[in-house]
Length: 286
Image (cartoon, rainbow, N blue to C red; front, top):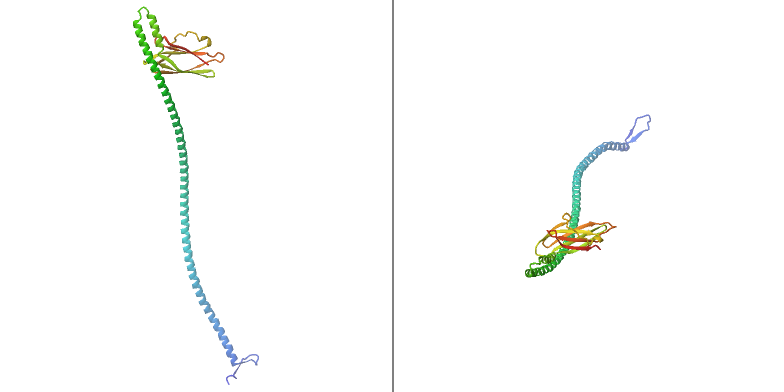
């Protein structure tokens, strides 16, 4: 009986009729439709809240991570600045060390050069000492020879003195002439050298004392032309060179000459204090 209940919709057309089952289906559909319209916003609200909470949490986590990264970045920047400063200090220290090393190398090189120069000077000094030693040995040998000559002269003088005592008194001039000849042998010219250089020539020699007593007087060195070699030279105190020696007296002098009229020789005259010649000798210029 219920299934046969029918519903009629009043309207302009009288043939609209709906069965009960159809009405229930339509009502259920509409109820579901309205229920879905209610439930969907509620679902969207909860989904939105959940999503918002998740996004807020993620934002906070991202913000915290960003802050940590910024803090780490600041620390890294500070470390980089510190490392750059340390690097600059090390570079400056390295430059200073290189400068010091360069100066040390220069100082070491200068020291080596000084040592080399000192060694050269030392070698030269040792060579000069050896030469001086050889000269000293030669001088000692010459001194021995001169001592022997002096001893022989002393013996001759003692013999002459004995002869003088035995000679008659009426020959004093002959005796004085003998003594003068022997006194001349107390001095000698040694190591005479003449060096020519263009329009000049120099003379070097040693005036040797052959006695054991000091000798003194004057020396005249006169350049002579060929026609003047046998000329007599008078004592001139202004041109004479005074001397006093126990062993030897070195003499060095220099003369100028004209090329068209050169000198032929040099005369060396040794005068005593009484202006008497004790040595008178010519030396030819070759």
